[in-house]
Each structure stands twice: as C-alpha cells, then as structure tokens.
Image (cartoon, helix red, strand yellow):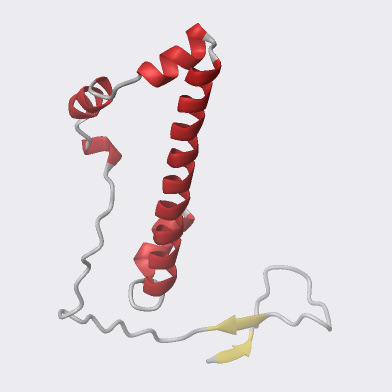
Length: 115
C-alpha cells in the first residue's frame, strides 16, 4: 500500500512528495530445494595439507630458470608457465559458466561470486 506521509521527516517538495510504502512479503520455503555446490571455507582449511602439497611439487624448473639463467631452462619454465596460464583460464571460464547457469536456480552461488 502506498499513501501520502502525514508527518514527513524532511521539508516537503512538490516534485518529491513524502510517501509511506508498506507491503506484505510471504516467504515460501521449498524443502525439496537442494544446494549441491561446493563452497570453500577458508577458515576450516587444512593448511598443513596445503603446505605438504606445495612442498611435494617439483620446483626445479623455476629454480633453474631463476638461478642458472640458461636458454633451455628459460624455455622449459616458459612452456610450463604457458601451460599453467591456459589451465587457469579454462578453470576460470568453467567457473564463470557455472555461475551463469546457476544464477536463476541458485542465487546464493551468484552472490558468493560477487563477494
């Protein structure tokens, strides 16, 4: 319901009359709606396992590129870096596609993307 506000908070302007708006909102909860998307909870992350995973990576290509300065080491590292960037782009594109596909059926997923 929209009606003219009798006691306005600010001075009345003829172009912007004070209005009072009230509406009734009913929330319908659908118990059958399931949320199956995985969401990362960084506070509960297993940082020890992350450390072990990073420690198990063979970093020799990066080390050789940084410190030995040979062309073959640069080529090897450059190829690995290009492969990483391509995979990162594919993963991010897949993530965006999932957000776009789920925005109607699962708006919470969209807002997690915005945050």
